Length: 288
Image 1 (tube, rainbow, N blue to C red):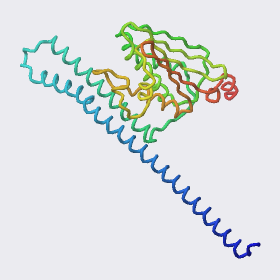
Image 2 (tube, one colour; image 1 turned 120 degrees about the vertical axis):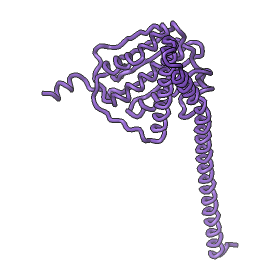
Image 3 (spheres, rainbow, N blue to C red; image 1 turned 120 degrees about the horizontal axis):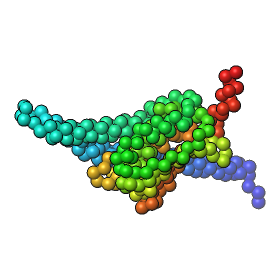
């Protein structure tokens, strides 16, 4: 016996109601999961920043105590009876602690700007070899102080690159400084810069230092991570250089890659595509 059209319509409407209800419920659950994941991510980010700031209380106080302590010694030294050698020694301690403190504060402010999306880059054609030469000059003293061997393999025919010269130099200096800091005295550091097979250019900084595990590397590249446990031994400055360099390169359209093996060393690579380069023929054509 056939059902009436009224019964068919009723079942059809009931089925449509179930479909709409199920779809709404599914969408609601998906939205709740998305909100839950975002909330967890925000909580983890806030926890990481809280831990970072907690660790920084010790990192900042250590050089400040040295500055204040040795300055007090000099300020209260009997007039005319001071030991010139001691005065020079204490003055050197103050200068070293001050530079250490300035470096840490600069890194923290840079990381905060980048993480907050407030870091601006101003790109323009610049001489890549000049950038590398200036970067090397910034770290040559610390490399020399540890009697490390610095090997430079840079193509003399490098083209200009469209980048923020100051930010690119900052990234290279950070990587060279990290390589020196975490490589033993007398170790080897290499800076290479050559054209790639696809027409771009690669800057490679490698060392034979202590290296990192995958977990340590992941933490060292995370903004405001607990870097002390990830990469830095007790008594050493915090290592924000890798995270800052990575983000500065990416802000300029480049890519950052790093490989590291505990006990063998680390290799950081900055890659810029052919689109960011200014070839000599193009420059000469534009000038005529």
